[in-house]
Length: 400
Image (tube, rainbow, N blue to C red; front, side, top):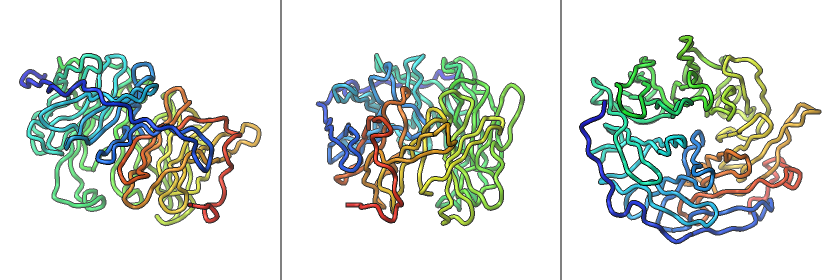
């Protein structure tokens, strides 16, 4: 239980900034794009693509911003473009952030010393009053572990939180190879009960994602280079005790960047066949019990995909060949997907990943880009599919 932290917001919480909104027609696709942030001295991004950042009945979008020398949470009014600062704490806000519309709260890990990986608490932020409260304290016995919030379970009453043993390893593969001890807990959002241990093992665990409709279901991944881990995606059913790899992965395959579809029964992912520089790439969806799998080719490997339903999905594109968000739609008659270009993004080696995420109503897509050298958040309206230009072979695309 959490009783020993007194945390209060500073005077800048709730500060309103003038809208920075710029709206334009994409030069390659004609789609309407809203650039939500434009400050050249800031670093502004929407949440990671597995997290739904829309709230206030879809009128606002949560942003992670580095402004005035500190990382904080902001919201943007999607009609007016007005920006509101939501946090003003002694130390910045970083890491995974999750929205709970039912409780009108946002959850994030917080370090009282300002360390990036040594958070001791998960805090809850009321997005109306901007009051902050401690929700979960790092479980006892994990003092030297990283700690953070992962997701809100579908009952809207519990959080998934996790700890990960800190190692001296540097890099993705080096960390995986140390096999750090990791553990996943379920915690009451009211902070009345101790966190309940659900799973632990000697393997690097991350990307713990809850089904949006089934409170007993969540996935986690064995982190590391996809061709080096045993199996990336694991499914847990807390009612039955099921805990096993979700999609069977053969030796010549790699899958990852998993996420839940909105109906809460299917998990999406992408991957490739062969060596890790192979171009035989695919996007797929599969039911949580590893049935009813549907997969289709995509033109890029280093990417992220997201979808609300199995009818269409968005793909980030690629840093080298495809500088566009790609929208794919399923044709029931041919039982195949057709792919079209949706929006241009600037993605060079120093650019942020777009991390494209469909809005809950499926009408817009949030993404990140840096067309002028600073990271900004964007929103593109999805036009009728037939109005978008058909995707061409990436070697023939004009990147000008």
